[in-house]
Structure formats: C-alpha cells, structure tokens
Image 1 (tube, one colour):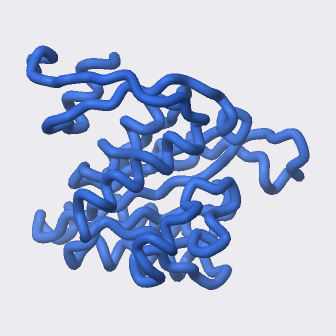
Image 2 (cartoon, one colour; image 1 turned 135 degrees about the vertical axis):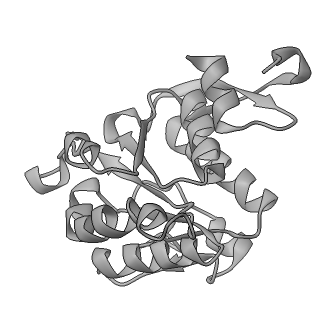
Image 3 (cartoon, rainbow, N blue to C red; image 1 turned 60 degrees about the vertical axis):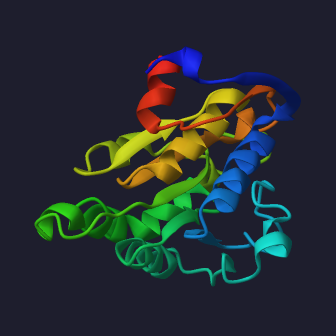
Length: 210
C-alpha cells in the first residue's frame, strides 16, 4: 500500500469507547448491511455506551436489543452473516460469551470450511473484558486464551483510541469472523484521532500500524 494515496487530517480528541462508536457509526453509514445486536445495545446505548445514539439514528432493526440469551443471539448473528448481513454482536461482558461458546466454536469458525467455501461469516463479536475497578469475578475474565484455540476465528485487541477505531472498521469489513477484545480499564483512555479518506482495508491498516 502506498500511504501517499491516503489523505489524513487531524481530528478531535476521543476516548477509546467513543472511538469504537465512531468507527462503528462510519461503517453503518457506509454499508446498510452492517447491524448491531446484543443486550441493551439499543436505546440504553450499551453497558459502556459504545452504541449510544445509534438506535435513534438507524432504528430498532439495525440496532437490535436482544433477550439475555447469549447462545441465541450469537447464533442469530452467525445466521445473519451467512445470509449477507454484517452483524456486530456485543457481549455485555466477555465472560457472558462463554454461554455462546458452542456457536462461536462449532458454527462461527467452522462454517466457511464445513460448507466447502459456500458461506462466508463476516461477523464481529466484541465486548469488554478484564479486571475493572468495581466488577465482580464473573465480570473480570480475560478469555483470549479460550478463543485462541478455535480454528477459523480472527482475534484482535485494541489498546489506544486510534487503533480501536481502525480495528473496528477493519473487522467489520473483513470477510472472516473477528473477535474484538476491549479491556474495560482502557475505555476512558484519550487520544487524538487521525481521519483518513479513501479505501482502507484490514491489510492496509495493519501495514501502516504494525
């Protein structure tokens, strides 16, 4: 990739959770197939406000509040990805996604291969994890090692507002299932965000930042 083909402008300062929201909102503006589902992601705006304001802007069908049933709405998201949508499934807490481990391991990661390449699964599974200041043990797990052993899954973890936004956008555009890990103690990290124009693929972003 030639970086001279991209035009950068300095943008406003954002907290990490705001950078995630901005990346998500830009992709929802760009592609009507992008949708969000999870517990309290709609009018409440998500447990850490990553989806705040999106239900009002895009409506209840693109920002879907679900019951407390991680296995069900994760499976629904995988099915939606198989049929052409680009869902972002939010786990209110990464520890809760253990309830959806069967769907993530036996469906999400494998369906592209077990179908002989007939299906792609462009889904993003994201949410907070890690020890927090006021969180109990069941809300404080880091589960990267659990998901690392699943074939077919891509895993990314954000560490700054800038790469949080970039990884969110790149994960949504990927044709592969991506799990995006967000540490709760980083949500209030603040940084100036560079805004880019033009095509920006997952490969481009990684080439420019790694």
